[in-house]
Image 1 (cartoon, rainbow, N blue to C red):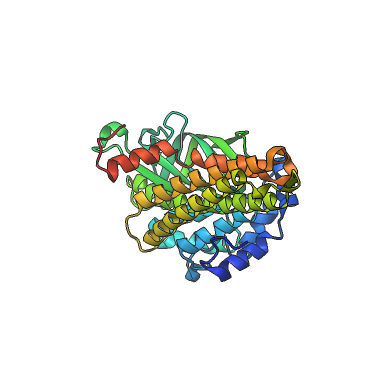
Image 2 (cartoon, rainbow, N blue to C red):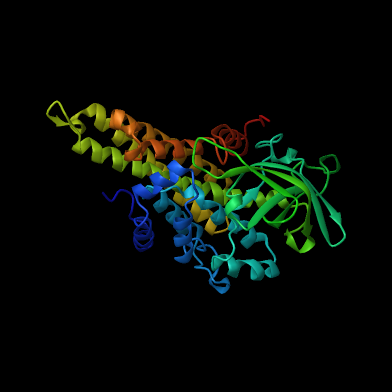
Length: 383
Protein backbone atom coordinates (compact mmCIF):
# COMPACT_ATOMS: atom_id res chain seq x y z
CA UNK A 1 0.00 0.00 0.00
CA UNK A 2 1.33 3.44 -0.94
CA UNK A 3 -1.09 5.75 0.83
CA UNK A 4 0.02 9.36 1.00
CA UNK A 5 3.65 8.72 0.04
CA UNK A 6 3.87 10.89 -3.06
CA UNK A 7 5.92 13.64 -1.35
CA UNK A 8 9.74 13.29 -1.12
CA UNK A 9 9.83 9.64 -2.30
CA UNK A 10 13.64 9.29 -2.26
CA UNK A 11 13.90 10.65 1.28
CA UNK A 12 11.10 8.35 2.37
CA UNK A 13 12.72 5.32 0.81
CA UNK A 14 16.02 5.99 2.56
CA UNK A 15 14.50 6.55 6.00
CA UNK A 16 12.13 3.61 5.59
CA UNK A 17 15.01 1.30 4.68
CA UNK A 18 16.73 2.15 7.97
CA UNK A 19 13.52 1.88 10.01
CA UNK A 20 12.77 -1.53 8.51
CA UNK A 21 15.93 -2.85 10.15
CA UNK A 22 14.18 -2.24 13.50
CA UNK A 23 10.93 -4.09 13.09
CA UNK A 24 8.07 -5.27 15.22
CA UNK A 25 10.12 -7.59 17.45
CA UNK A 26 12.61 -4.84 18.28
CA UNK A 27 9.92 -2.35 19.36
CA UNK A 28 7.99 -4.99 21.31
CA UNK A 29 11.11 -5.88 23.27
CA UNK A 30 11.93 -2.23 23.94
CA UNK A 31 8.37 -1.64 25.15
CA UNK A 32 8.33 -4.74 27.35
CA UNK A 33 11.60 -3.76 29.02
CA UNK A 34 10.59 -0.09 29.20
CA UNK A 35 13.97 0.62 27.70
CA UNK A 36 15.29 3.44 25.55
CA UNK A 37 15.86 2.42 21.88
CA UNK A 38 19.56 3.28 21.89
CA UNK A 39 20.42 1.18 18.83
CA UNK A 40 17.68 2.77 16.72
CA UNK A 41 18.53 6.35 17.73
CA UNK A 42 22.24 5.70 17.15
CA UNK A 43 21.46 4.37 13.67
CA UNK A 44 19.36 7.45 12.86
CA UNK A 45 22.19 9.66 14.08
CA UNK A 46 24.92 7.87 12.12
CA UNK A 47 22.80 8.03 8.98
CA UNK A 48 22.54 11.81 9.40
CA UNK A 49 18.79 11.96 9.92
CA UNK A 50 19.01 13.36 13.45
CA UNK A 51 21.08 16.28 12.16
CA UNK A 52 18.68 16.96 9.29
CA UNK A 53 18.05 20.58 10.31
CA UNK A 54 21.69 21.47 10.98
CA UNK A 55 23.16 23.48 8.07
CA UNK A 56 25.88 21.80 6.03
CA UNK A 57 28.45 24.36 7.17
CA UNK A 58 28.14 22.87 10.68
CA UNK A 59 28.25 19.26 9.52
CA UNK A 60 24.52 18.63 9.15
CA UNK A 61 22.28 17.75 6.22
CA UNK A 62 20.79 21.21 5.79
CA UNK A 63 17.25 19.97 5.20
CA UNK A 64 14.06 21.96 5.67
CA UNK A 65 11.52 21.44 8.43
CA UNK A 66 9.22 19.95 5.80
CA UNK A 67 11.80 17.28 5.07
CA UNK A 68 12.39 16.75 8.80
CA UNK A 69 8.68 16.03 9.22
CA UNK A 70 8.96 13.33 6.56
CA UNK A 71 11.70 11.66 8.62
CA UNK A 72 9.55 11.66 11.75
CA UNK A 73 6.50 10.47 9.82
CA UNK A 74 8.37 7.49 8.43
CA UNK A 75 9.58 6.49 11.91
CA UNK A 76 6.02 6.16 13.22
CA UNK A 77 4.69 4.79 9.96
CA UNK A 78 7.23 1.98 10.12
CA UNK A 79 5.83 0.97 13.51
CA UNK A 80 8.41 2.80 15.63
CA UNK A 81 8.04 5.48 18.30
CA UNK A 82 9.47 8.86 17.30
CA UNK A 83 9.00 10.20 20.84
CA UNK A 84 12.42 8.79 21.66
CA UNK A 85 14.17 11.23 19.35
CA UNK A 86 11.93 14.03 18.08
CA UNK A 87 13.14 16.42 20.78
CA UNK A 88 16.40 17.03 18.98
CA UNK A 89 14.51 18.11 15.85
CA UNK A 90 12.52 20.91 17.46
CA UNK A 91 15.10 21.87 20.09
CA UNK A 92 17.51 22.39 17.24
CA UNK A 93 15.40 25.23 15.87
CA UNK A 94 15.79 27.23 19.08
CA UNK A 95 19.56 27.09 18.77
CA UNK A 96 19.56 27.58 15.00
CA UNK A 97 17.25 30.57 14.94
CA UNK A 98 18.31 32.38 18.11
CA UNK A 99 21.72 31.10 19.14
CA UNK A 100 24.93 33.08 18.61
CA UNK A 101 27.46 32.15 15.98
CA UNK A 102 29.85 31.09 18.74
CA UNK A 103 27.23 28.76 20.22
CA UNK A 104 26.49 27.25 16.83
CA UNK A 105 30.16 26.62 16.09
CA UNK A 106 30.71 25.11 19.51
CA UNK A 107 27.77 22.73 19.62
CA UNK A 108 26.30 22.04 16.19
CA UNK A 109 29.23 20.09 14.67
CA UNK A 110 29.33 17.82 17.75
CA UNK A 111 25.56 17.30 17.60
CA UNK A 112 25.76 16.51 13.90
CA UNK A 113 28.54 13.99 14.56
CA UNK A 114 26.53 12.32 17.31
CA UNK A 115 28.99 13.33 20.03
CA UNK A 116 26.32 15.41 21.78
CA UNK A 117 22.53 15.07 21.91
CA UNK A 118 20.13 18.00 22.36
CA UNK A 119 17.02 15.99 23.20
CA UNK A 120 15.66 17.72 26.31
CA UNK A 121 13.71 20.90 27.00
CA UNK A 122 13.01 22.11 30.55
CA UNK A 123 9.94 24.34 30.34
CA UNK A 124 6.90 22.83 32.10
CA UNK A 125 6.57 23.17 35.88
CA UNK A 126 4.21 21.46 38.37
CA UNK A 127 2.60 24.73 39.47
CA UNK A 128 2.35 26.31 36.04
CA UNK A 129 1.50 23.58 33.55
CA UNK A 130 0.77 25.16 30.19
CA UNK A 131 0.56 28.64 31.76
CA UNK A 132 4.25 29.09 31.05
CA UNK A 133 4.34 32.71 32.17
CA UNK A 134 3.77 31.51 35.76
CA UNK A 135 6.98 29.50 35.99
CA UNK A 136 8.92 29.93 39.23
CA UNK A 137 12.34 28.68 38.18
CA UNK A 138 14.61 31.69 38.60
CA UNK A 139 17.99 32.54 37.10
CA UNK A 140 19.90 35.22 39.02
CA UNK A 141 22.91 36.95 37.52
CA UNK A 142 26.05 36.26 39.54
CA UNK A 143 29.57 37.09 38.43
CA UNK A 144 30.24 35.72 34.94
CA UNK A 145 27.05 33.74 34.77
CA UNK A 146 23.74 32.80 36.34
CA UNK A 147 22.62 30.71 39.31
CA UNK A 148 19.36 28.84 38.75
CA UNK A 149 16.90 27.38 41.26
CA UNK A 150 13.52 25.79 40.64
CA UNK A 151 11.74 22.67 39.43
CA UNK A 152 10.65 21.22 36.09
CA UNK A 153 8.36 18.35 35.23
CA UNK A 154 7.72 16.23 32.11
CA UNK A 155 11.27 16.91 30.97
CA UNK A 156 11.65 14.15 28.43
CA UNK A 157 14.77 12.31 27.20
CA UNK A 158 16.95 14.12 29.75
CA UNK A 159 18.72 10.90 30.73
CA UNK A 160 19.68 10.36 27.09
CA UNK A 161 20.80 13.88 26.30
CA UNK A 162 23.98 15.80 26.98
CA UNK A 163 22.32 19.18 26.45
CA UNK A 164 19.03 20.75 27.53
CA UNK A 165 17.17 23.93 26.62
CA UNK A 166 16.11 25.51 29.94
CA UNK A 167 13.58 28.31 30.46
CA UNK A 168 13.88 30.44 33.62
CA UNK A 169 12.75 33.83 34.89
CA UNK A 170 15.48 36.44 34.87
CA UNK A 171 13.09 39.26 35.82
CA UNK A 172 10.32 38.80 38.39
CA UNK A 173 6.77 38.63 37.07
CA UNK A 174 5.84 41.66 39.19
CA UNK A 175 8.54 43.75 37.48
CA UNK A 176 7.53 43.26 33.83
CA UNK A 177 4.87 45.08 31.81
CA UNK A 178 3.72 41.93 30.03
CA UNK A 179 3.71 38.54 31.71
CA UNK A 180 5.43 36.96 28.71
CA UNK A 181 8.48 39.17 29.30
CA UNK A 182 11.38 38.55 31.67
CA UNK A 183 12.07 34.91 30.81
CA UNK A 184 15.30 33.68 29.26
CA UNK A 185 16.54 30.45 27.76
CA UNK A 186 19.84 28.75 28.42
CA UNK A 187 21.76 25.85 26.96
CA UNK A 188 22.59 23.55 29.88
CA UNK A 189 24.90 20.57 30.09
CA UNK A 190 22.79 17.84 31.69
CA UNK A 191 25.66 16.46 33.80
CA UNK A 192 26.03 19.80 35.55
CA UNK A 193 26.06 19.87 39.35
CA UNK A 194 22.72 21.07 40.68
CA UNK A 195 20.36 18.89 38.62
CA UNK A 196 18.47 16.14 40.45
CA UNK A 197 16.66 14.01 37.88
CA UNK A 198 13.81 11.72 38.98
CA UNK A 199 12.06 9.49 36.40
CA UNK A 200 8.26 9.50 36.04
CA UNK A 201 6.81 6.08 35.26
CA UNK A 202 3.99 6.51 32.74
CA UNK A 203 1.51 4.72 30.48
CA UNK A 204 3.82 4.86 27.49
CA UNK A 205 7.42 3.69 27.35
CA UNK A 206 8.56 7.30 27.28
CA UNK A 207 11.56 8.56 29.22
CA UNK A 208 10.36 11.64 31.09
CA UNK A 209 11.35 13.18 34.41
CA UNK A 210 10.96 15.61 37.25
CA UNK A 211 14.01 17.86 37.60
CA UNK A 212 14.93 19.63 40.82
CA UNK A 213 17.33 22.52 40.21
CA UNK A 214 19.47 23.59 43.16
CA UNK A 215 22.04 26.36 42.66
CA UNK A 216 22.78 25.31 39.09
CA UNK A 217 25.56 27.50 37.70
CA UNK A 218 25.32 28.46 34.02
CA UNK A 219 27.97 30.52 32.21
CA UNK A 220 26.67 33.77 30.68
CA UNK A 221 27.84 32.52 27.29
CA UNK A 222 25.14 29.83 27.48
CA UNK A 223 22.33 32.38 27.38
CA UNK A 224 20.56 31.98 24.03
CA UNK A 225 19.60 35.26 22.39
CA UNK A 226 18.72 38.29 24.50
CA UNK A 227 17.90 38.12 28.18
CA UNK A 228 14.18 38.44 28.81
CA UNK A 229 13.04 37.32 25.36
CA UNK A 230 13.11 33.59 25.98
CA UNK A 231 9.35 33.10 25.85
CA UNK A 232 9.22 34.36 22.27
CA UNK A 233 12.13 32.09 21.32
CA UNK A 234 10.44 29.11 22.95
CA UNK A 235 7.21 29.76 21.04
CA UNK A 236 9.14 29.72 17.78
CA UNK A 237 10.57 26.32 18.70
CA UNK A 238 7.16 25.07 19.81
CA UNK A 239 5.71 25.80 16.37
CA UNK A 240 8.33 23.45 14.95
CA UNK A 241 7.49 20.92 17.66
CA UNK A 242 3.78 20.96 16.81
CA UNK A 243 4.43 20.57 13.10
CA UNK A 244 6.80 17.65 13.70
CA UNK A 245 4.33 16.02 16.11
CA UNK A 246 1.57 16.39 13.52
CA UNK A 247 3.75 14.46 11.06
CA UNK A 248 4.31 11.71 13.62
CA UNK A 249 0.55 11.46 14.09
CA UNK A 250 0.10 11.30 10.32
CA UNK A 251 2.58 8.42 10.24
CA UNK A 252 0.68 6.68 13.03
CA UNK A 253 -2.60 7.27 11.23
CA UNK A 254 -1.40 5.68 8.02
CA UNK A 255 0.05 2.78 10.02
CA UNK A 256 -3.33 2.15 11.70
CA UNK A 257 -5.21 2.37 8.40
CA UNK A 258 -2.80 0.02 6.64
CA UNK A 259 -2.81 -2.39 9.57
CA UNK A 260 -6.62 -2.42 9.75
CA UNK A 261 -6.99 -2.80 5.98
CA UNK A 262 -4.59 -5.73 5.85
CA UNK A 263 -6.25 -7.49 8.77
CA UNK A 264 -9.76 -6.88 7.38
CA UNK A 265 -8.67 -8.39 4.07
CA UNK A 266 -7.11 -11.49 5.60
CA UNK A 267 -9.37 -12.19 8.58
CA UNK A 268 -12.15 -14.64 7.61
CA UNK A 269 -15.28 -14.96 9.75
CA UNK A 270 -18.57 -16.55 8.59
CA UNK A 271 -16.71 -17.84 5.51
CA UNK A 272 -15.71 -14.44 4.12
CA UNK A 273 -13.19 -11.66 4.83
CA UNK A 274 -14.50 -9.23 7.43
CA UNK A 275 -13.46 -6.42 5.10
CA UNK A 276 -16.45 -7.22 2.89
CA UNK A 277 -18.69 -5.83 5.61
CA UNK A 278 -19.49 -2.14 5.31
CA UNK A 279 -19.43 -1.91 9.09
CA UNK A 280 -15.71 -2.65 8.82
CA UNK A 281 -15.04 -0.78 5.55
CA UNK A 282 -16.63 2.54 6.33
CA UNK A 283 -14.73 3.44 9.53
CA UNK A 284 -11.41 2.58 7.87
CA UNK A 285 -12.28 4.66 4.80
CA UNK A 286 -13.35 7.60 6.94
CA UNK A 287 -10.13 7.43 8.98
CA UNK A 288 -8.13 7.51 5.77
CA UNK A 289 -9.95 10.67 4.62
CA UNK A 290 -9.38 12.40 7.95
CA UNK A 291 -5.66 11.62 7.85
CA UNK A 292 -5.33 12.86 4.28
CA UNK A 293 -7.04 16.13 5.22
CA UNK A 294 -4.83 16.63 8.28
CA UNK A 295 -1.80 15.93 6.13
CA UNK A 296 -2.59 18.94 3.94
CA UNK A 297 -2.49 21.25 6.97
CA UNK A 298 0.76 19.66 8.10
CA UNK A 299 2.42 20.57 4.79
CA UNK A 300 0.96 24.09 4.81
CA UNK A 301 2.28 24.74 8.31
CA UNK A 302 5.71 23.32 7.48
CA UNK A 303 5.95 25.40 4.31
CA UNK A 304 5.15 28.61 6.19
CA UNK A 305 7.71 27.76 8.88
CA UNK A 306 10.41 27.14 6.25
CA UNK A 307 9.58 30.49 4.66
CA UNK A 308 9.96 32.22 8.07
CA UNK A 309 6.33 33.28 7.86
CA UNK A 310 3.91 33.44 10.82
CA UNK A 311 2.55 29.94 11.32
CA UNK A 312 1.18 29.74 14.87
CA UNK A 313 -2.39 29.07 13.77
CA UNK A 314 -1.36 26.57 11.12
CA UNK A 315 1.03 24.72 13.45
CA UNK A 316 -1.70 24.42 16.07
CA UNK A 317 -4.32 23.31 13.57
CA UNK A 318 -1.98 20.74 12.04
CA UNK A 319 -1.21 19.25 15.44
CA UNK A 320 -4.87 19.18 16.49
CA UNK A 321 -6.21 17.69 13.26
CA UNK A 322 -3.45 15.10 12.98
CA UNK A 323 -3.71 14.00 16.63
CA UNK A 324 -7.48 13.71 16.37
CA UNK A 325 -7.40 11.84 13.05
CA UNK A 326 -4.71 9.40 14.16
CA UNK A 327 -6.50 8.68 17.44
CA UNK A 328 -9.71 7.88 15.57
CA UNK A 329 -7.68 5.62 13.28
CA UNK A 330 -6.20 3.93 16.36
CA UNK A 331 -9.68 3.18 17.68
CA UNK A 332 -10.80 1.86 14.29
CA UNK A 333 -7.72 -0.34 14.01
CA UNK A 334 -8.22 -1.80 17.48
CA UNK A 335 -11.91 -2.40 16.83
CA UNK A 336 -11.15 -4.07 13.49
CA UNK A 337 -8.75 -6.48 15.18
CA UNK A 338 -11.23 -7.30 17.93
CA UNK A 339 -9.66 -9.31 20.73
CA UNK A 340 -6.40 -9.68 18.82
CA UNK A 341 -5.96 -5.91 19.00
CA UNK A 342 -5.13 -6.34 22.68
CA UNK A 343 -2.42 -8.93 22.00
CA UNK A 344 1.07 -7.39 22.19
CA UNK A 345 2.32 -9.40 19.21
CA UNK A 346 0.10 -7.40 16.84
CA UNK A 347 1.61 -4.05 17.93
CA UNK A 348 -1.81 -2.39 17.88
CA UNK A 349 -2.10 -1.96 21.66
CA UNK A 350 1.41 -0.50 21.89
CA UNK A 351 0.82 2.01 19.11
CA UNK A 352 -2.62 2.73 20.60
CA UNK A 353 -1.00 3.77 23.89
CA UNK A 354 1.75 5.76 22.20
CA UNK A 355 -0.63 7.68 19.99
CA UNK A 356 -3.03 8.68 22.77
CA UNK A 357 -0.37 10.94 24.25
CA UNK A 358 -0.67 13.47 21.44
CA UNK A 359 -4.18 14.59 22.34
CA UNK A 360 -2.64 15.82 25.61
CA UNK A 361 0.95 16.72 24.78
CA UNK A 362 2.86 18.73 23.83
CA UNK A 363 -0.23 20.94 24.01
CA UNK A 364 -3.79 19.92 24.86
CA UNK A 365 -6.61 20.20 22.37
CA UNK A 366 -8.45 22.71 24.57
CA UNK A 367 -5.56 25.17 24.50
CA UNK A 368 -5.35 24.91 20.73
CA UNK A 369 -9.05 25.70 20.48
CA UNK A 370 -8.61 28.65 22.85
CA UNK A 371 -5.71 29.96 20.75
CA UNK A 372 -7.69 29.80 17.53
CA UNK A 373 -10.77 31.34 19.13
CA UNK A 374 -8.80 34.35 20.35
CA UNK A 375 -6.06 34.89 17.78
CA UNK A 376 -7.82 33.79 14.59
CA UNK A 377 -11.54 34.32 15.22
CA UNK A 378 -11.18 37.38 17.44
CA UNK A 379 -13.23 36.03 20.33
CA UNK A 380 -12.61 37.34 23.88
CA UNK A 381 -9.63 35.87 25.70
CA UNK A 382 -10.75 32.95 27.88
CA UNK A 383 -7.82 32.84 30.31
